[in-house]
Length: 82
Image 1 (cartoon, rainbow, N blue to C red):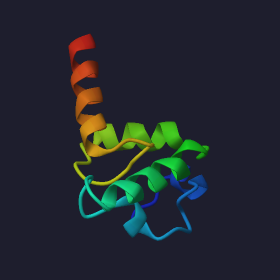
Image 2 (image 1 turned 30 degrees about the vertical axis):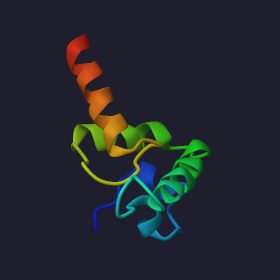
Image 3 (image 1 turned 120 degrees about the vertical axis):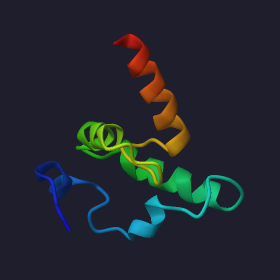
């Protein structure tokens, strides 16, 4: 697995990756998404993580404190600013 320098300082590094990749964003999985976002909220590398997710178009999981819907919206906003 390829690691980026910033990822070595991630708050999620020693956590179960399944927390950040719930089955869905609805129902019982919603609490899992919120837990993952809570971890991201205090992460020292939240911004580079989000940049990575946007640059590589990560369609699943919580990255940089955002879920897939939030990243799609953010990508659209950024595209319109260019």
